[in-house]
Image 1 (cartoon, rainbow, N blue to C red):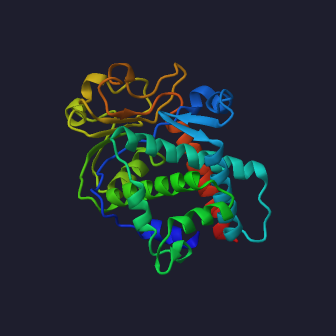
Image 2 (cartoon, helix red, strand yellow):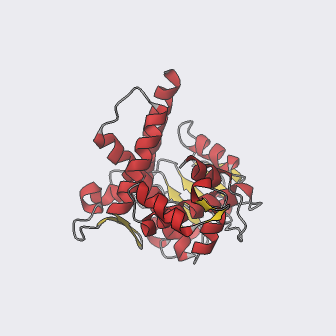
Image 3 (cartoon, rainbow, N blue to C red):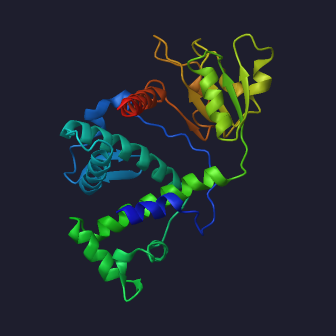
Length: 291
């Protein structure tokens, strides 16, 4: 597995680069885990857009997380609930990206995958890639070869997508409406780190709509219900609403923009789950750093 992982992490890709800025939208907050994880098809445990997460996907992810955690915390026993939580969160994020890429008709052929794996010794026979060895390796690790190939393809696709964004010269104009030290300013820094051209606005900004109408990405974090009007936002923009108010609305008037934007975060159920995931990740990282 380490050899495959090294390929994934070092992959620069020989295919056309996919230059995109995508916002991963989760709907868990509005329906809850019980509603999100389906009981209808015994083999399908969840759906993300047009993508279905199967038992095979979940078992594979649990195995991957178990191995990773055992390497990071060799002296600690990881309980099943923690493994399952990490696995399902990773799968939801991954399949959100895959669903987006699938909507853009982005695919990797079996031949491409086999070519990328050709240098892996465990898949070679007489110095050349062997499909039979690949399938034997999958079975020896408890997986159906077709399921294993599907997982490898998905990991390659996401690696190429991420590498494309990092290496691209794509520049986006982004507007962050809000200047708080816990949301607006950190969000602006994160966008800057991704090579976006960022403007920070706030409730006192003069002619705010003139700034927003030019933005490719808008982040609302001003703390006033529906403060940002839908007609201030151009068609095709990415809209991130970080606000939440008792009226069950955010800082952006989403009703008039949903059909015109390329992506948006619903309220509730959009930014909230991502905040929770980030806090959990940072807690784990802080704990790991203190060991």
